[in-house]
Length: 326
Image (cartoon, rainbow, N blue to C red; front, side, top):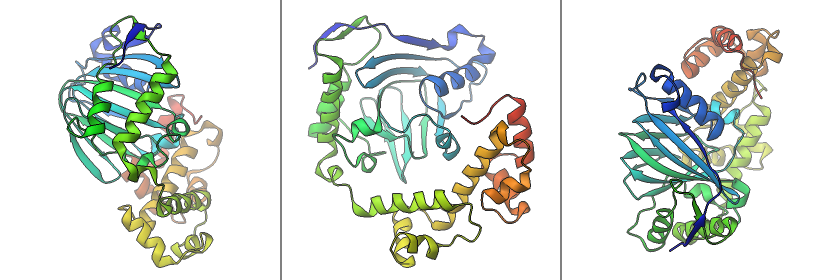
């Protein structure tokens, strides 16, 4: 296993530092600034307790999180404004959780690990008070060992399998409760964990399938051209050198559709414009057109369903709070 030596200073945030009635709001703000841009809900809103300890491990950031039961959601809106496009490797130390990503749903027990792709929506439900270690990997760095990391996201890695067992055992050594650090250089230890993750993933995760690359390219085309009101599956398929039928097949394999991807991309665009004070003089109708919506009423219905309020009310509340897009 991994020998230890003195660790450098760490950062810590705790709800114990604020009044209980502000605890959940403080936790959400802390997590979004120091961990990842996510939405958090809890039934213990007025008595929520949580703590985040954070330290570096070479190119990796190590986080130890203790928190009451909570529901964590990484939405497309959060992703659109995110500063981070990498991965988290999470190991549950105490409690129980459910995780959903890429249409995969799993129950996470104590000792299990799961890889989280921060560039795609996910849902993590902590069913009771949990303690978790979460290693944050830069995407480009992790792809040196795991070129198709997203194929592993959402699949639980349990101690019963050979290399998964080695990975889970290695992660079990990490903690920020002491003033010790690893005997080896932090960057070497981080690489050690990445190698174990690659071995646990197996050979299939090392093959970046052409269909997945093509689907990512199609999604980029949709993002680049979502403002075109007449954008069709045929147009996007032609731009990527494939048939319309094959385009629909690729989305079906990803448990999605062209229509749902286009609508969500347009809503992300509108959300970004309405959140940015620089566009406050642009009418809601013009925002709808810039995002590719021809009918303002259709845009308003879709926006309200996605974000819980109409576009005008959303803009007013958001800009009044002093928020603007980065």
